[in-house]
Length: 211
Image (cartoon, rainbow, N blue to C red; front, top):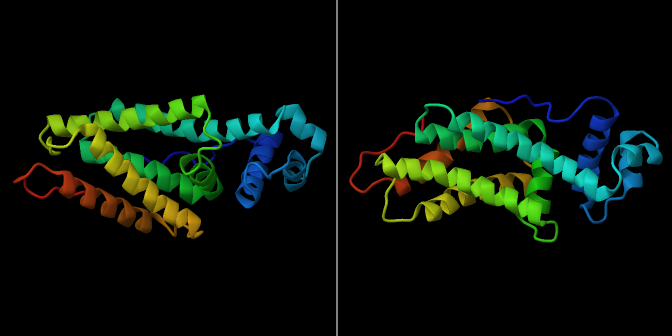
């Protein structure tokens, strides 16, 4: 389920957001200045403030693009009659597709939100909780269908799955390692899924294939 890579609006608004991604990735949120973002976007300082009243509003707009895209994928997956491994695969592919098309966005999500508490507001924490709950819903379905083992709580398996995904993507982000193509994404997704599914499968059950 490859999403539209254009997560940002066209025109000045989009240019400001794209510039903010580059500046925040380079300097970090707390050291980035609106003047730096205006310079990167090639527009006036005042115009940045016209679209976004303060730096926090601009940062929030960036995060909205991430979460809106993710929750759209989750809604589509929840409404589809697909197997649990495929649902988990779509979560992985949202991270990988976004990293391929907007690596700076994933970089900021990992470095400023996922692995940092200084920028974690109440609203952002609620988004994380929703993210975890939706994933846990799929894990619970796997347990109910006898695909995943039930001697571990669904919440624990959820943490294991998301931890593996976050660690894998974080390693790529911190090493500034790009996604080289769809074949690489398939290999990554298959690796994460096969290790998770066959480590979490019901004891005595036949090996689960990720693809």
